[in-house]
Image 1: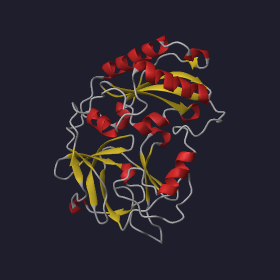
Image 2: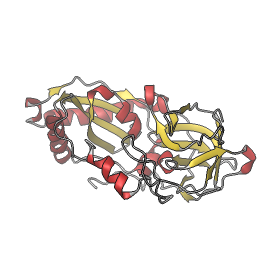
Image 3: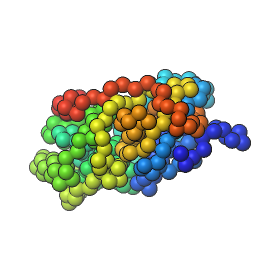
Length: 298
């Protein structure tokens, strides 16, 4: 791999998962370092010691508390509360003066959602969620955007979130780009037909955007499984095929296509491993795409 994860000069490479700065994926580390990811590169690392809470909102955990290897949040209860207390998504912020946008996101056939994001963030929120295709619907104040999100969820019968196991399965059997765009456009048309919200938000012209190329999803093989947790001494090796949202799609040495949710990496100290060290972290079988189809609100 292109980054050296062994401790050097007293520096520990403490993972903070993946980031999408500048519209490209990169592994983030405590202290602000970022290691760029490129599709086709080899990854090989070992988790060291015990997973510890990385803190919240730029503040380190005062206790560096040990946390469960299976927790995608990876934070202790106190830091999790601090993070949520300042979250727009958690409905705890009401006075943010910056403009927001309402978006319609597509993750797979029949898997769409409506959401909001700060306009200044551009497409970052969609990349972080792994939206394969999306379109903007409207822009305006935070509370108007939030009300519109709720109204449309109820009127259109779409959720405000889609489970990650469903997203992962869908990425390995995507319909053509034109079909993806048409499904988003159809949802846009239905949303525009819902009355009331255009009185408080500025409607935006429809334009389909697609992230399949950015994520590297073209030609992915069948998904064989997902990593359930990292463990002390456990090794992950493979060739990076794609990255979408927090997920890395890897071709393991034994030929399996596996997904590693990088949220499981947060709080671990990682060191470089050799490609011959194998793949020795727990893996569960993938959820079949048919089972992952959206079943209304949840």
